[in-house]
Image (tube, rainbow, N blue to C red; front, side):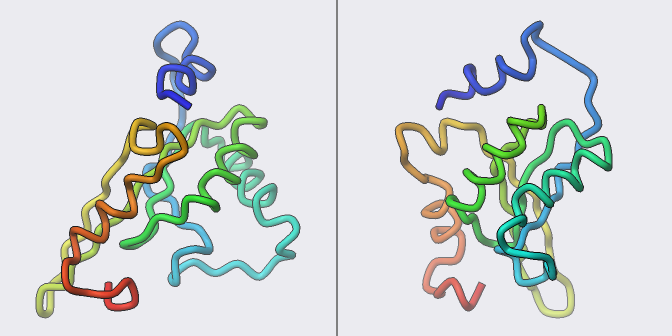
Length: 133
């Protein structure tokens, strides 16, 4: 899906005022806690966004991107008029201090059924396994 097609559904006139959250975590992130029924995870997640009045968001789990989870969340969000983008929260621990950087990707990173986000994250942590970052 191209970013023009996706954004055209939500921004048919080029722009629109929306409440946004560019720092969303999901159950793919070890710091996120979900205790509900797994069968309703996606709808419950999107219902929470809707309840908060969020019209656009970015999924930014720590140092990882779960493409299957993102696709399912985006599909459910789209049905509810919520625009989601893929992202990642890069967290690099440097001694006592850490650096957190939110990266937002456009749909070109997922074009033609390809996931270019995960290899990007892997390259950021060269020489480490995903469990180490």
